[in-house]
Structure formats: C-alpha cells, structure tokens
Image (tube, rainbow, N blue to C red; front, side, top):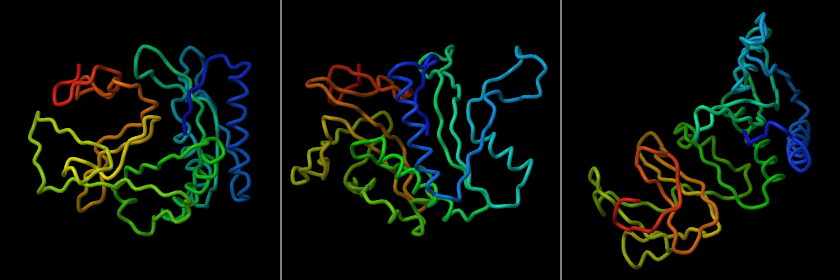
Length: 252
C-alpha cells in the first residue's frame, strides 16, 4: 500500500504518517506469526560512492531478495514499512516520495497466503478509512477461483453488478456509447441498475470472459460539481480532468 509522502515531515503531516505507521504495526503485530523486516533505502549498499547510489522504488523486491539469499525454504511471515521514490506521473522529471506498507508471506499455499494478507489489509483499512471502499482484483485467477471468495470480508462488493448483454448493442471502433447510471432499467438497455454518488466512489469497466472478469478500465473519482463533467481528453491518456459536458461528442 502506497501513500503520498513529503520530503519534509513536520507538524500535522508528521502526525499523519506516524499514525499510519502505528496503525499498520498494531494491525500486523496482533498476528504473532508476523515479524518486521528492515531494508535499506539505497538499492545497492555495496557501492563505494554515494554519488552512484540509487534510491529504492519498491520494498517488495528487497524483501524477496533477502529471503532468497538467507533462507528460501522456510515459511516466512514478514511485514515492512518505509519510504520509496517513484517518478511523478504528471512530470517524469520529478521524483515523488511515498510511504509503503506491506506484508510478504513466503512458502505458503497461494490460497492461504492471499487470505492471510487480505485479512490484514481489511483490518488496516477499516482503521484508517471511515467510509465504504471497494477491493479491485485484476488477476482473473482470483476472480475465477471459488476458494478465493472473500467470506472473511464483512462488507459486500459487486464488480459485475450490471451487465450490457452482447445482443443489446454493438460498439465499433471510434464509436461512443452513453450509459445512464440512474438505477432505472425500465427506461431501456442503456440504463443501469445503480446510481453513481456525487460524493465520489469507484467505477470499473469489466470484460466477462471464460478466463474470468478482466478489468479493462477503472476510476476512483472524488466529489463532483454540478454541470461539470469528469473524463479523459484523449483515449490514449490515463489522466481524468474536469471539463464541459459534451454527451455523444469528443471530450474537450
């Protein structure tokens, strides 16, 4: 899990990240099987000069390499936290600092390790998020395997709540389709059985096939403004932005 950090942490910002670290530590350490692992913020500690040093962009790889080097056969239940450094998606010339929290379960069956990690994640999120949230799994093997069903999760999510049947309509290249998320299917096949909250939520576009439910696109959007649309200017870009509503026409 990544949260945006700042180069200088003080006052309320420092308290925020101290609180996150404390909540995560308390959540994981409650499970006595887990122990904390520490890794260096520098990728290669064998360098002779700091001018050649590379700041880490992820902690997971460091943890795996440590285990492979020291004890690759035993079962390991590990957790970690620390700062990582990644390129700014909005400006690739800039580097952003993030706080990463994570667990690694090694040499346990995929089903059991997944459930162990998910239990911790769910408990942690319930402590730090005071509203509903949605899990999105992009691996079809998880969605298609009944043993992964999340009966350990108390809240309900349904990423296939509404489906546009193949016989209803065809969308050809460069064509557009307007769907009305108004919870009023009686008005036609393009009206969904759910509404979108103006306060913000999650929306996914799913391709249902024989291999499982593949997420084609998704967005977490915030509070919306009246008579202002929110979308992409280009189909090639990933960034959403506010714009003038233009139903049925190219966004601009």
